[in-house]
Amino acid sequence: MSALWSNLATPRPRLQDGGVFVFQEDFFVIVIQCVDNRNGTLFHGRRQSRDRLLRLHILAALAGRKLWMNSYSFRQFQQDLPPGQAVCVDEDFLAKAGWGEVCFVEGLPLTPWLNRIEQLILYRWNRDYPADTVLDLRLDAISWVLKCREEFPGSSHPVITKEVYLHETL
View (cartoon, rainbow, N blue to C red):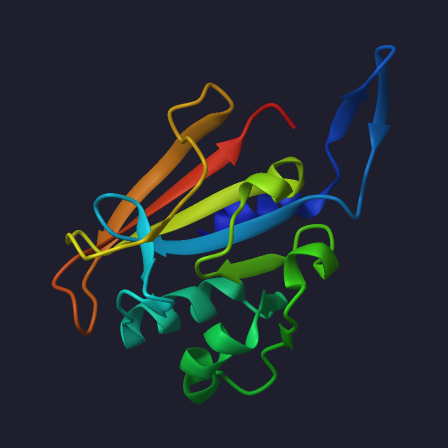
């Protein structure tokens, strides 16, 4: 995952109206979200599941990069944070995260932020859970390209699948 995150080390040009390329250094973010087999994220306002090894996997891949989340998500991460890990807890974190920063999202709509998301990293539980909130992005749309998939064991799930999607139209 770190190798893909490093692709954000330099700003990419973005084509604006009139055919002019501009660089927007504070625009693109990386979103991490956990989903079930049907892209469910929450049930009755609560996360479907959690996994300690998954959190450690995410934190190790950050390699010191700042991690944004809301207070609900922070409660599951705070016990596992390594010394010096920069974490920003804010209810409006998707609006405040800067270029190349990582946002851990639970149950929030991503469609309003679509033009800010350069990468979407999904961690799949590989189970069917009850859900009344689902990922609201269409990953089969032409703009999302699956760049890699890997599996690893979790602490409460035999296999967790990580999928990294790039938003190619940005």
